[in-house]
Length: 160
Image (cartoon, rainbow, N blue to C red; front, side, top):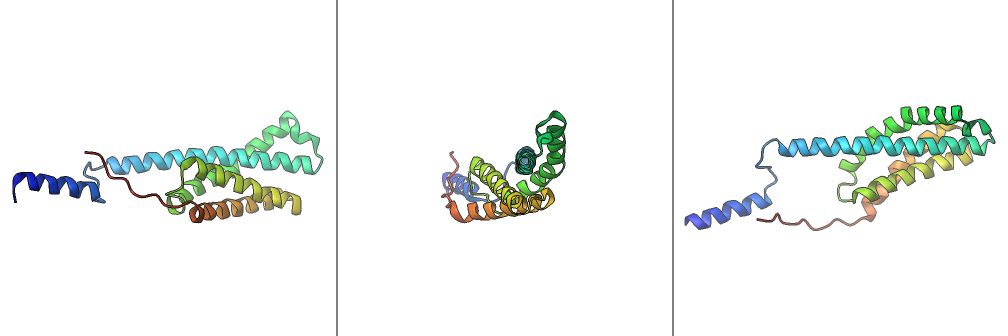
């Protein structure tokens, strides 16, 4: 085999190899993406939890939920529960179920699923703790639905 043929073979094998030839860069990139997913999950989990709690206060005609103290309580409660659940479940769902789903669609779809599940529980049952469980179910159903609905794209070759 000539030197040019060996070089071509080496370049081609690097394009299709599942191993990263740069060492730790792959792990750093995975860690950075996971950290970003955790922050996005926390943020959108907090938003969804706050909206569900404000909706709960409106459904039960509780005007105190719209006061400054009520909004602070809703935000703190949502940060503790919705934010933490989003920070944990978001990356898990993204890596295991939605790797081929565009990021905006994954975040938006699961947030809407969480809001739908929490909203259904508020209308049907009226308990915010049960609404949180239904919100988690809505998150899971939307993540699975996105996995089944969004087609996989062809892998692109790396440029030379």
